[in-house]
Amino acid sequence: MGFIYILLFVLVSGKILVSVCKKTFPPKAWTKSQKAGVMYSCREEHFWIKRNADIDIFLETPVMKMSIIVGLCLMLVACSEVPREVSQTPPSHQQWHELLLKHVKQNGRVDYRGFITDKEGLNGYLDSLSAHAPAATWSREERLAYWINAYNAFTIKLIVDNYPVESIRDLGPALTIPGIHTVWHMQFFELGGKPTSLDEIEHGILRKEFDEPRIHFAINCASVSCPPLRRGAFTSDHINEQLHEQAVAFINDPTRNKISKDRVEVSKIFSWFEADFTKNGSLRDFLNQYSEVKISEKMDIKYLGYDWRLNE
Image 1 (cartoon, helix red, strand yellow):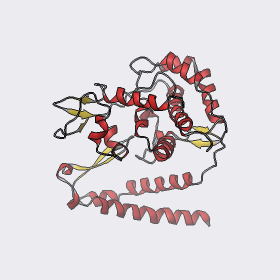
Image 2: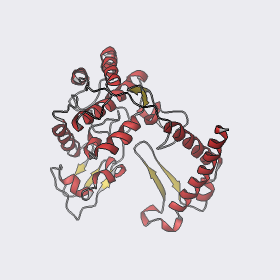
Image 3: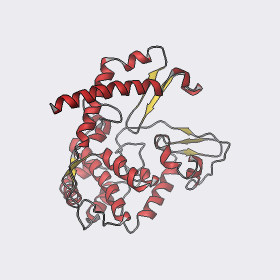
Image 4: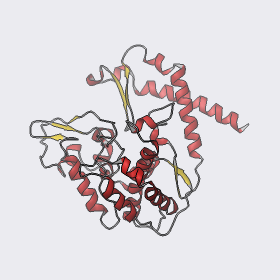
């Protein structure tokens, strides 16, 4: 009987979501820059729905309905959370620090073959993370360092376990639903006995709990256009200085952001997570805190393409 109630809930919710989609993106509400279509965007995927009279038909197609139903089912499963067992003692990040110094180049490119040879050491550090999930008694700095290191270390594990691969996105599920069911949503590891995904660490913990936009320059998604993986572990004693260094290095990296007196083209990270960067001012204000070239009010900010190839 419970399954029937859940199925009815999913079907009704799917219909409501389709209705919301149509109300959210009515043709009359499109701006001039959206004449070519409506863009749905997130860190994982970017795709367009052509602007034409068939948009309502698209939203009502069996494929779209099934995607919505599957997505809602996944969210229902995710709501059945297993409590995370916490540790009063933070783990040491020294082993991770040594691995990064050994297998990350000065330009941030990663030697995944080297990590494969040191897989035992990597797994040892990951086991330590799994056994020492953060407790409420930890300081903010201890928790922040833990979650950033965990995100980066388990991303390395994902690539190492599936190497060779051209892009991290190739490792996603057969049925990919942007923002709901992607490689970042796979629960391929446990922390404190709780199945966990990279998406949960990034969006459910780092972005939600810390109000720290600089985390976007610290976590690495194993792709060329991502902020480079730091050659060293993040530590509670130096986390603020490390995040500052990451911000300065990324924003002034000409391969990832092109900021000059005549042109401003920045990473799409600043578009995807604009809300994180503009809580205390404009995006221009945030960039000018770290950019060597100050951006004038007259300059338009444009966004560069994103290279999802493996960062090796």
